[in-house]
Image 1: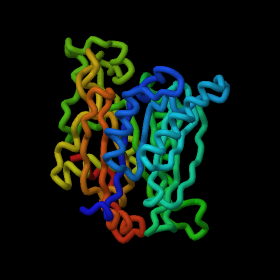
Image 2 (image 1 turned 135 degrees about the vertical axis):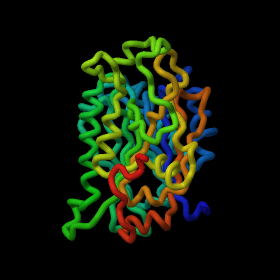
Image 3 (image 1 turned 90 degrees about the vertical axis):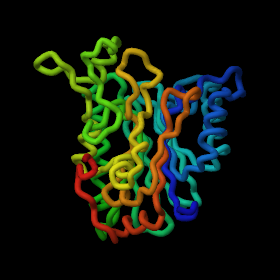
Image 4 (image 1 turned 120 degrees about the horizontal axis):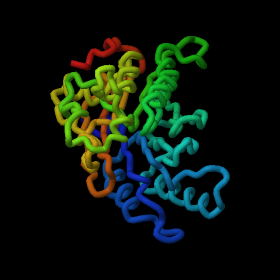
Length: 330
């Protein structure tokens, strides 16, 4: 697939935004490496970034902190050659962001969400030049790390965006829309067809019992079952994981590799918690999915999804048929 026909989506949780400035006006080396040596060479067209801890602030912080955040956010856009969007800081200090390549998406509009989320999603509506009448509803999200009930609630809130796929409400003619959601789910995928073994929460190797309470549900018999609510909700609503499409339809089994958990001790081992979800038309444009090893820079690997621009356009115009919900869980 040529770069002209490719639309590249990317997700990365750069741990703690690369860290604080070592001194005012000097960006940290880990941040610089992340943007210049990992992200820039990949040339994403749409990028979901998580844990923008030092690239966004609350309104009541000191001017110096605001200036530092703007300095970092501006530098990120300049390095990437992309336009950036940030959500507000939520209950915790790891806000989300989205970067877009305007040559691919000439129209972009941000919509804001309430700050009741652990990290409010960065919701950006895009238009592809070949389908200017079809809005692409996109969002980066970071689910609550310690609260299964809140993760479920946040995922249900995201279904408001999924709901726009069937008919975009701002279009009086009742046109269609697409939906792309990428984030750190802080939960596990439904285990059917996965390559990373499910966690055995009764194993003596699981020593972080607080983490177990954050990521598993205690059953009536005293055993523990991994939280998979985010994945289940997305699947129930007809959204699809592009890694599953790549693995089960294209034979790219490495698409299901773990993205996090390899740096933690006593938490059950590597996990595939960083995932994307595409609507039932967009997912059929997936040509390649890979997990990019970023060991040494972050406790999460990056996920890269390449779409065929031609196939994406066909889906946006509904020249293909939707695939059924849960059809990639095999």
